[in-house]
Image 1 (spheres, rainbow, N blue to C red):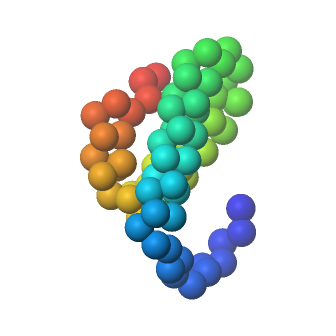
Image 2 (image 1 turned 135 degrees about the vertical axis):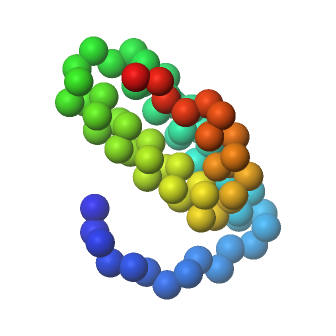
Length: 75
């Protein structure tokens, strides 16, 4: 991923709600995929992606972070 820091996103409440839905959907899919993956390297990549998704959720929709803290991935 690119390490540059873009400017802030100016989103409407409706756009934030859609972003939250998309991030939560991706988070759910990643948790399922992590659980079903046998290859350790791929699972590690998925976990890294999960951390990124949860980080985005925390920045743009803090309520998602609260729910993910209680149901994070298990090893």
